[in-house]
Length: 192
Image (cartoon, rainbow, N blue to C red; front, side):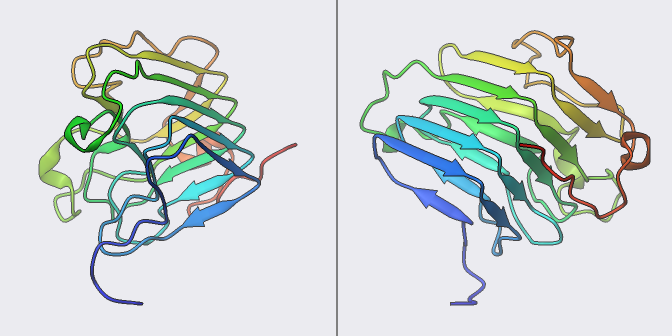
């Protein structure tokens, strides 16, 4: 409705399964998440989820946890984000009907792009370094492999306490878009 209220790009309530396949979700408004899913299982494949120049919060929000799989996709945090997190898992347990779900997250063969520059005038400047994942569950099984990650500040945090291990499983970390071979505003083309 073009209002200035919260606007998620795609919101899935408490359902069994959400599949996002060959899709594009981009440029939310009102600080909504690009994709918010409370599904027990969420699968994202061959899709682009990009903040671009929109005013958004997290790229992916899974407030109830669940089994989450992301493959051959682009996750892009735009410069107008108000949040340092790219992904969150289990952050709203009080509003979930199945709080005992042990979460798992796998991100494979995808592009992960942080376009925050940490300048003093950006919307999330006072919140800290870019963070790949925030989780509020007793434990999480997280796997990131064969991804291309662009993060220009050199201060990427894996999570609040760096508890999910490291990113040395054939992930490629680039310090700029040009080093990764893509233009300033370009979204990488996915191969199928």
